[in-house]
Each structure stands twice: as C-alpha cells, then as structure tokens.
Image (cartoon, rainbow, N blue to C red; front, side):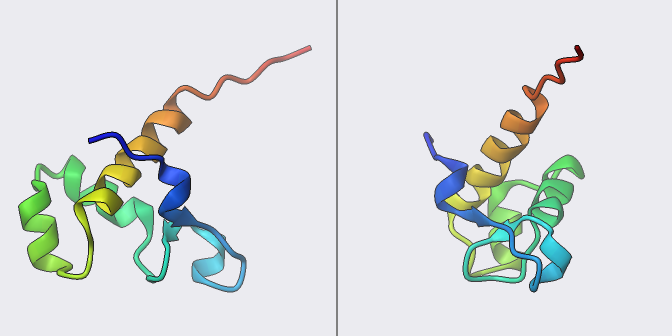
Length: 75
C-alpha cells in the first residue's frame, strides 16, 4: 500500500509535547511502531485502536522508513 506519511502524521508543540502523532488523534507514531516491532499485525493493532485506518498504520511505517534514510552531512 503506497502511502505518503505527510498526509497522516502531524506534530505540534501543544499536543503530546510535539511528538509525531496520527492526525486527529493523540496516538503517537512511536506507539504504533512499537506494536509492529513487538510482532503485532495490522489486524491486532486495529482491534486495539478501532478508529485507526490501514493507511494510518502504513503511514507510520513510511515515516520510519524516511527517518532511517536520513543522512547527516558534516562539513
């Protein structure tokens, strides 16, 4: 499933102290990624958080992928 994380993930200093979260929720991206890292599948995550969509869960993975590709350039 092709998803652009920027359509689903936001960060604002007044909610969750600026941690990246799913738009319209107080669910941090790190929570969803933690569930996935623990071996939970998308069905199990949706059972725990019924309002989440498959696109939102995929957006968390796309966000993590983009962070993993980040390179620091030193001068």
